[in-house]
Image (cartoon, rainbow, N blue to C red; front, side, top):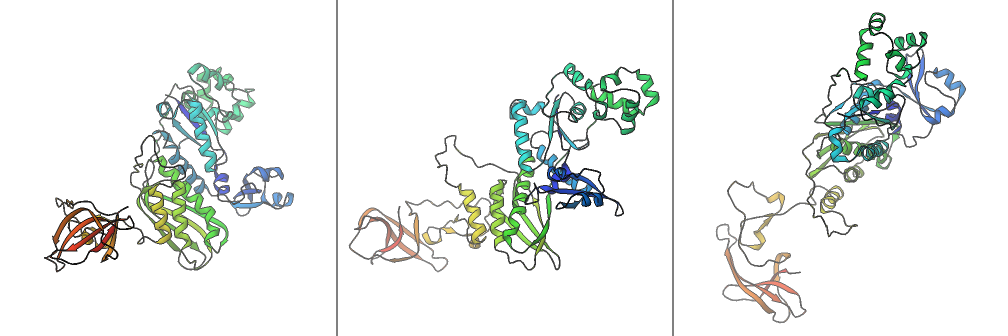
Length: 475
């Protein structure tokens, strides 16, 4: 087997920065007790001001001005960890959150699908960068070795036990994944690298250090299998973004909305599913929140399409009060079936697929403005199709197929008298006699006719005589 470790050294801070309109502005996470607030993490711009992790907040404020602060929330960090695990699940069925600040995934079985490791790694890096998370990636024969090597390397890819042992042996003690007290004890003994620790008598290490240290050494070398708990994606998506300001219009919500829909798309791709209905929840300081439901006719997972649909629904909402937070929840996550297309699709590159156009029209015009048409078992042309409000529940075994001749692409709502000179009849007559049971009895002879101006029309004449009536147009 072969494993990849994705180290996320700035997970909590990146989770905050990705909701900021300007992630490059100085910002720090603040944790600790209320009596002693300390900087838990700082971004590069704040580090350039001289701020460092572990600095007391009052000292940081005395040293520099103009940096923003956010509270460090361990539960938020865990939520982002699980979100990235759901994303990684799209690349491997064995993903684990068990090792700290990292994702480990088995990649040997995925190389045949995603290509050789350099190409696979580039794809992972590209998507992580788009999601807004800094990272380091290392591949090694076992997950513990990959996690330890990621402490000191980025982009390292090792195949085979001998190269892995050489790379591990060169690691400094402080980066070998030991507990702090064990690493300090080794340093006081004059040990600098992991190779020197391996040279010590094993029974001596067993007497002086906890049993976990020997288990860690064995797991690094692959001499002991580590039982990793595999991640399984949930059946519901929930994500909330707390705004740093009050948004008074829907336009001010577009940036967090784009991030929410992109995260939903990444989550759906990971579980190979789609979404047919989701809901936006707008939170206000006072009063109940505003709910914005978004429904689709078929499951989708394209980030751009989801954003456009949510945006269209959001722009129709009158905000009763400024918005302080926005959340997205999706409980209906059916399987996603991609649209079948030919290998050489004749559709122009700039044309929009029908599925996307349909959903955008529904979002802009309303759910009842765009609907399908269902064939109905009736020979009368005006009764041969039904729109959704009129559609009866179809019973099993009842066919809606009706044999008939050519039908026009444009059927008039009501027949109108045909004006002008006598048309030239090209086909017909096709007699239709039906409707005696519901009071709508019709007895007509239909013809395909060419009018004087060259247009092809669908006309009929009542049985027994009478003038021609126009009922439709052919393309």
